[in-house]
Image 1 (tube, one colour):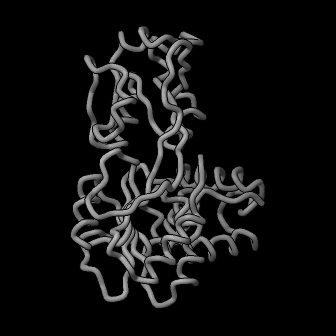
Image 2 (cartoon, rainbow, N blue to C red; image 1 turned 30 degrees about the horizontal axis):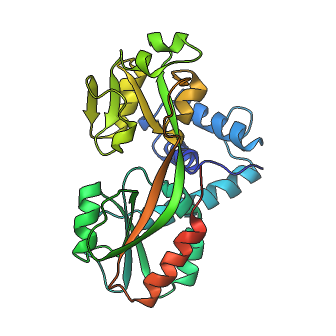
Length: 283
């Protein structure tokens, strides 16, 4: 059995519970699509032929997925809540691949038994402000030249970048592109991406959220650089295609860094930094 996608497991639990407890909240066809996608992802059968009941393997997966869902709900708490005593708070911007942290969650809680680990997503400006104010213990963000005062930093991981546009966009007809061709079309860019990823300074839409970037890309409103893992599902379903530059060196990686205050001497935070190093990956 392959390792399932966490988001798909979450949708499986919700769809299954709607089927048995709240059948009026979703259609049978939409639930069957979720169930069929999960079976295909895992290469195994989880239901009877008409998807009305779980088999024994499906029951076991549901129990474990429900347990994981409850753990994640506890892990991903609101940044507006007041910190409780003995907490380690990790702040991350939207580029940080939180999936790798979630996979390491059991090890975090087993090796930091006296601490409550809290993960909050913040903007880059909020990360810096709250780190310097001592409101968070560790920050993960896109690496920047300018570091906040009195902080240490080290590399966390590199993310693969992709150059993409909609399948309907005129750029999609070219196997290889030059920078000049790109610059004739609008670039969609998140406003806190590194400046070296802005190839079109004249016609560039600065966007605040990744969801907006993705939706405008699919609508054919321009092209964009973005972390590959944001776009993989749209590459697979054909709504987006990957572009390739032939005569211009463009960044293919986006570095994520770890920041912490140099006055931070808590041994549990030091252990957490070590665990973050183990959970890091390139992808």
